[in-house]
Length: 244
Image 1: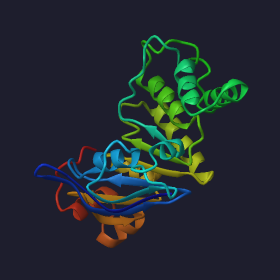
Image 2: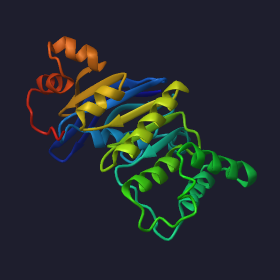
Image 3: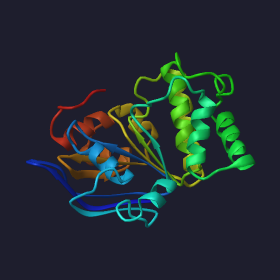
């Protein structure tokens, strides 16, 4: 479970987070949605422990990324918006490296790597160098790195950006499967259809604050709009920043 309470962060004269408060629950997919500049990236980086907030509190399964950063990183899997693969390494070597960073050794490590390769249906590319990989293949490697240590919480930043239809389907099926296992999944996106289809709950941010927090259906009902995109536009008060 991820808990964000009264989180504040200012960069010189720019307020990125202004009392941000929400929960992402176990066994749910929570979407973090907002126009450009809403503070989504700052929020996610605070969860990773990459940014220290000026005030407020973040907890991941009761742990603070400020005071217990290593323990928090063990309990989360991070799927970044840029995959940053080393092209001379194979997919398997990338996954093995992350497994070893999380303390897996010997047969246990090999079993974990084989498990995630099979789960993501990437046996055909596992022992190829990642140079020349398609965006979908690169996504699989990054996703395997995010889940190889079986984290309780998965954080995804714009997960479907640049993916083809089949890669997007694999990603969605994995997210649904992790939800069924009781994992906590938090992801940011600009794609309205994706959010409406995937999320149990949507946290809509504007200027570092939460303006709405409910299921897509409930937000449509609250605004009297038939489509989630129209509900989103009404809730943020402008169509600025919508990309899809």
